[in-house]
Amino acid sequence: MPAKQLRVDEPTVRRRLQRAARKHTLVRVRRWTPESDRITGYVVGVGSAWFVLAVQTDGSRPDGWIALRVRDVSSVRVRSRGDTIDEKSLRARGEWPPAPPHHLELDGVRGVLRTASRSAPLVTVLVEWDEPDRCWIGAVERIGKRVLSLREVDPGGRWKRHRSKFDLEDVTRVDWGDAYNEALLLVAGPPPR
Image (spheres, rainbow, N blue to C red):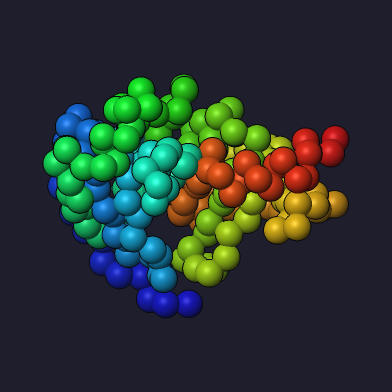
């Protein structure tokens, strides 16, 4: 496992995220987590521990949300200041500014998971400090005090028999409402009871 790097100044990161949310600017976020990708989107919510980006596809269409821990962020860079094809296409579709999910809870991972599972039937969970090259997609079955129980769906659209469990403190990223998860759900159907 790679060594953890020193954390960046969280208050500065939070201020930059809040400014981006107020001004509806497209940002690129980098994180300290191992092998993490740069994520581009519009900040639609900032809490004490987590924030949410509304993600765009290459075709400038909304493609779900990504929640990240503030403490993992190493930089927040403005990608555009209005008048971009992304903003213009969203305006033309009547989808400007990008909307946050309903009942947004960002003060801890439990709230993020509640928000995600209320907004979409499938969520993607990442625990990047332990397994940086993996993600788990499924339906949230239970959010305990310390553990998440997830009924996974495999890449072929088949529900797994057994539930996966994750320590909540290890979750570094949660995605939901994206086209890939919607396609998986279309093939898999609703989770078994």
